[in-house]
Length: 320
Image (cartoon, rainbow, N blue to C red):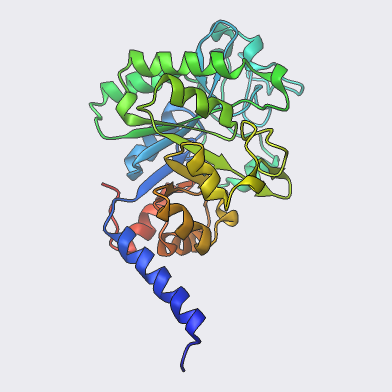
C-alpha cells in the first residue's frame, strides 16, 4: 500500500525523532517517589524509586509556619493519607502547612492510604509503611548523602496556587527557602525546579540562573493553567505566541512538562526544535508509557517507574 505524501512525511518525522532520542539518556522520573508502589513523598518511597532505577526523584514542597521546607504535595494535610499522633485519620478541613510548625508537621503519619477512598482505588499496588512521617527536603538530601549516591537528581515542584494566595506562603518566600536548602546541601547542579505557577520559575531564573526551570502545563477540562488570563503563567498569554512551546521558550524554560494527554507529535517536534526537553506527566499505563517513549519524549514522570523501566529495557534504552 502506498502512503499519501502527508502521511509519509509525518512517519518520517516520527522515526527521525525516535532515532535521535534513542541515542540520548532517558530521564525516568519517579512521581512523588514511586507513588504507585510506596507512600508518596516519603523517604521510603524515594528509596524504592532509586532501587527501581529512576534518574530523577520528582517531589513537591511547601513551607511551614516557621520556614521549614517540607516534602508534601498538598497545601494542607491530605485526609486521604494523614493520621494524627494518636493514629486517627485527619478530617477536612485540615490545617494548612503554613499554619503548622515543623514540630507539628513531623508528628503526622503519611505511610498508608485511607481505605475506601478514590486514592486507594487508583493505587492498589501501593505498599503501606506505618510510622512514615512527612520529611523535610533536608532529610531527603541527607539520606542521599548517607547512601553515597552522587547520581540521582531531583525535580522539585513549588506548590502554591495563585488563585488562593492565602493558602501558602508567597512565591518570593517559598523560592528563598527552597534555594537556601539547595545551597546548604550543594545540590545546585543536581536539581531542576518546576511549577505550574510560573512566578516561582521567574524568581528562580533571577536568583539562581544556573538551575534549570521546568514549566508545567495543563489544558484539561478540570484543570487548565493556560487559558485563564495569565493567572498561572506570570501574566503570559498563549494568544501572543505561535505555540505553547514557543511561550515556554520565551519564558526561559529548559524543560516543558505538559499533561501527557495534551502532547501531540507536532507539539513535541516544535518544542524539541526550540531546544526544549519534553517530559510529560503523569504517565502510568503501560501502553501510554510505551507510546510516549516511541514518540520520542526526553523523559516522563510516572507513579509506576517499574513499568517505565521495563518498557525502556524492552527498547534498549538507557537512563544513564
